[in-house]
Picture (cartoon, rainbow, N blue to C red):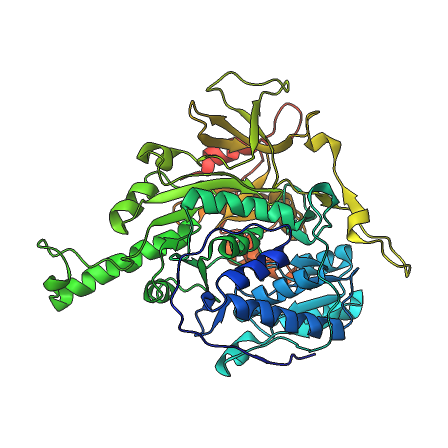
Length: 570
């Protein structure tokens, strides 16, 4: 079905200082921000639209009514696979207003993953764009909905933007009371995020409003976010980082610039025009900002605009209001902090470390030393406790690498257990919560699977990971999932997928294969087409293929991936 349109109020009210806000639920945080700075722009997008704090509150309430008319109730699950847009944020806040569980899905996932997710969560309503970046999401959703029994909501954000509207359903029907202001373990599960983790089947990670807002507090504190800040969100808003940054913006008054589709040539210019003070978040974005600054320098030299720079002819800063750049989700290349500081200005690069199960466990701070910023992922955020343990489970001596264990208020509530099959009524999300005992130590610390060391002043350096994943453009790619698809190629005998260092994406996905006897060599194009035909998301498709006679193995018969990484790394 298509959506109705909601007019967007305009505002030119300047940003003014406002104190940080706290709340028990996301909806309460929305209301408190609207009460504190009602006419201040809070959300902008690269399609020329904006919403004030009060505008977000009112648009979300109207959309909540529209969701009720579509059959969304307290036990419903709303899945949405939307680009980074005003519609995605308003829909998320509307779900928060109703107190329903919502399941953001990054737009790069395809039939294989989305069908699995919709089936497992028991999606009532699935919201998608008609098309995005050349892919027909409406056709995919329609096919999934017909099989899984989910209702489809098509949200055409670009058509709505052209009319100065929001492409969401609305209604003025009376709304039920907001969700109760419960705290701690009594909070209901509101968020279901999927992560590839280390297994072929994605895992549904459960969060409450409280856990998401606790992670946001770490960002507000570390970067000293305030109402004068403008933070472009170029990564998929469907990541847990999108909700965390929304909560951070609501608490601090920071304006978010929502970038529908990141273009390395034009998006940095749009961000500069909006006065970005913070830039992020993965290495490819940061490289694009550096390239844009270099292009301006070359243009200035070509035009002879020496008056725009200093006495040596240096280019004017493309981001004159920049305070800091941020990175997270993957290891940063050596020297990137200094490149950012020298090339873009501000404090340079601050990094964070976390995972879907425990977002923003650590965060670099503005008063960290340059060496801290260049070599570590910052210190534990407020309320977070950390252990470093060896294979025996005992605490490692200071300065010794071990597995990192964390405990704190942003801890996930558990994983989503599979729904019952058949025509019977599914149990509510909160009753399908699983907390595997092997993932926690006896004191409730979560075993992250990442290996690192904590320095004398608490700074964390990640040295490796136990998880068999590839982190490309800050996206987790399950090696076993990709291997499962490649193994079905008729010419492939065995396959091992590994991550190799890449200066642009952090890591690239490399498939090392053996051939079936007598088969012709398999090229990258052929393998990519096979993966795409199998419904694998494009970002998971290998970028490199290596053919070997035999895959090396350990004494226990497992494929020795470290040997392959050493052999094929640049």
